[in-house]
Amino acid sequence: MNQQKRNITLTVAAVCGFIAILVGLFTYTMMQPRILSVKELVGLGVITYQEPKAINDFELVAHTGTPFTKESLKGQWTLLFFGFSSCPGFCPATLAILNAMDAQLEPEIKEQTQVVMVSVDPARDTPEALAAYMPKFNQAFVGVTGDFLTIKRLSNQFHIGFQKEAGADENYNVDHGEQIVLIDPNGDYYGFFKPPFTIGQLKTGYQSIVKSYGR
Image (cartoon, rainbow, N blue to C red):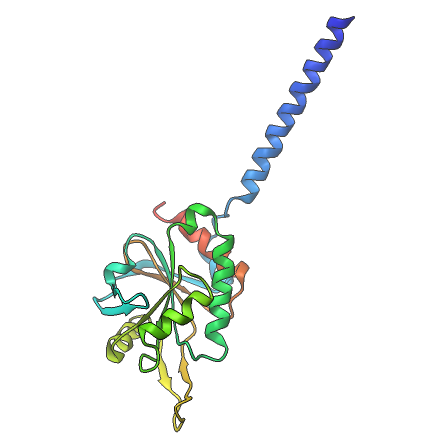
């Protein structure tokens, strides 16, 4: 009788263990970023190019005081947008959303991601000004500034315009395009995210792209 009970106990334990494995596999699968089709990405406001576009050389400076060039875009994915530290609404909102998205990324993807804001107001956005501004959102985010014409030429490569508000005093605003540019690990222009942005939209679209890259 004791042997029979022991066999029943072992059988129940084995079945429970098997069920636990199935549940674990199902949970793991459900938690993995889903690979989206081009049509699904477009539905999220994510546009990708069939052939990534090469970016011309440029020389700017990061808020840390170190050079920021085309080489700074290689070796990881870059989410880049144009903004400025005196921006009243869009820029801080976008940085806050990107910070929230960054916190939710799969660790492996987070490790190969950098977020960059290139200033469209280099007259006020010195490296020191950006060094005080960027860490408010995320210590790892990079603020970039430099020569106005260099920034303008870089923005033109992404078809993003910007212009100082006419007739404004020293508290002027700068109108600028609001796309988030996606640059692949080769340093090429891979695509862009169209506003309005949400954490879910950015996270889902971005992780799908990274997971499917090179397949």
